[in-house]
Image 1 (tube, helix red, strand yellow):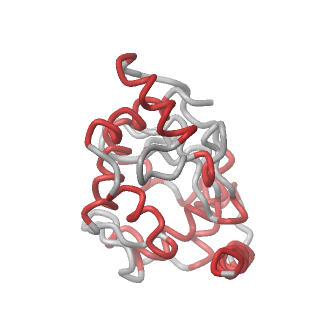
Image 2 (image 1 turned 135 degrees about the vertical axis):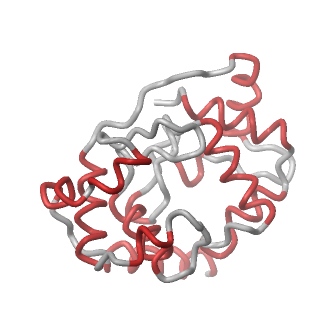
Image 3 (image 1 turned 90 degrees about the vertical axis):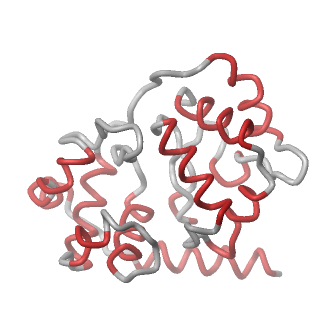
Length: 197
C-alpha cells in the first residue's frame, strides 16, 4: 500500500509540471550555460550534465533550489528569479538535447558497478528498479536519467544522499540506498553509469 501511494503521489507531481517550450527555454538558458554548457554538457566534473534529463525532474529540482528544499549555495541564487514557466521552459530545452556519451570510464570498476546497478548488494536495492536497465529513469515517476553523467558529480550526489546533506528524495529512498553503499560501490556505480546507454 505504501508503494502504491508513493507511485500515485509521484505521478501527480509529474502531471502538475507545466509543459514547457523548448525554444523559449533555449533563449533563457544563457546564464545556465556558464556552468552547464551551451548544449547542457558541463565542462566541470562536479557540475551535472543537463542534456537529455527528463523535464519533470529538472523542473522539480529548479523549484526545490528556488524554494530552499534542496541545498545548493551556487544554485539557489540562480533559481531565485525563475518563474514556474521559466523552469518548465528550461527543463523542456534540456530534455530536448542529446545526453552525453561515455567518457572516462575506469574499467576496474565496471564489474562491481554492473553488479550493484543490476542486482544490488547487501542492503542496497538494484538501481535498475527505479532507473531502468539503461539508466534512463522513469519520467512519470520523476526518477531521473542517470546515464552519461559526470563521474565526480555522481559520486558527490550519492555521498550527499548518504550523509543526509541532500534530502529532497521521495520518502528518503536514495538516502536509505546510499547509506548502505560503501565508497567503493559508489565509485564503481558512478563509473558504470557514465558508460551505460
